Length: 299
Ligand code: NAP
Image 1: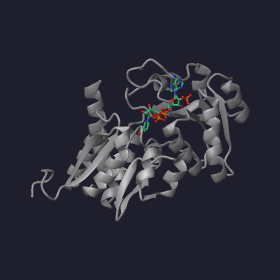
Image 2 (image 1 turned 90 degrees about the horizontal axis):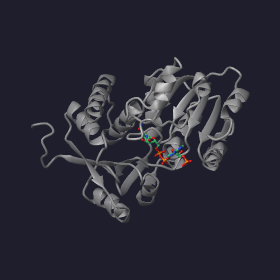
Image 3 (image 1 turned 90 degrees about the vertical axis):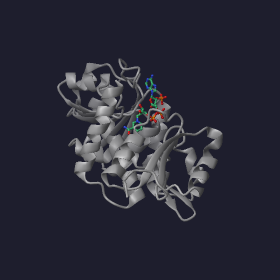
């Protein structure tokens, strides 16, 4: 049998969202199924909001093994599933649907994907001071990961302080020993950082959309006093490869990483859920290179 040539045994995987045209997921999953010589075809489906339920139920009826879900449906899709994994329920977002007997079970692989990406980059948040910038969809997964990993102090900075407070309040009852503070990007958060920790050593996770292509000269934080306190930083954006946020971290002499590895590992974890087998490190490395090359060719 010729591998990856579509035939009657090919199983369907896919992505639903809107828009999906620039997604790297079809490339990522195509590479994965090629690496393991498995008969999957992964397609990107732009789905209009009024068709979301039909799309999920239709995919199941057609026998699709699994789907990824991207913006703007990560929360809404939960209404159309037969089960939701408890951590995804807590995060309030599902990005992976796994086929079950009577429908799909929803998972969140962004959270463990970020955890694996940090590990890959040698960043250890356990017992550390971590500043999380942003309080939107992906910040939920990032905060859950920080709580699971038991960061010592978490400071959420967001343009809209109320959203940061709401995010913290949502998780606090589930992690009663955690220390979470919130501030707006307009107030003196540097004084607050120094009040929380006199060591002036923080890991930063940038989870806003500021600085994403094509707004590549923007950053949520300009003050160099902030970057001087950052020992390591991750920007969850991966296009451009180096955001202004990352370049400011590097200018202050520290290490910064982009969000491509989070994308890679959330995809790998989804693939492992769909196929039931483990993706080895060398395969992950090979696919990371393919994704990096693809982004370079788009720049
Ligand atoms: P979202 O739910 O729309 O949240 C956007 C966040 O950005 C909010 O915190 C928002 O603040 C903030 N923001 C937007 N414009 C701003 C501005 N002009 N100044 C300051 N803050 C601003 O988006 P999301 O789904 O969380 O995604 C955020 C980013 O993460 C995106 O760039 C996306 O590419 C990236 N991401 C990466 C991965 C990965 O695998 N690497 C996965 C998911 C997302 P307010 O609350 O004040 O509006």
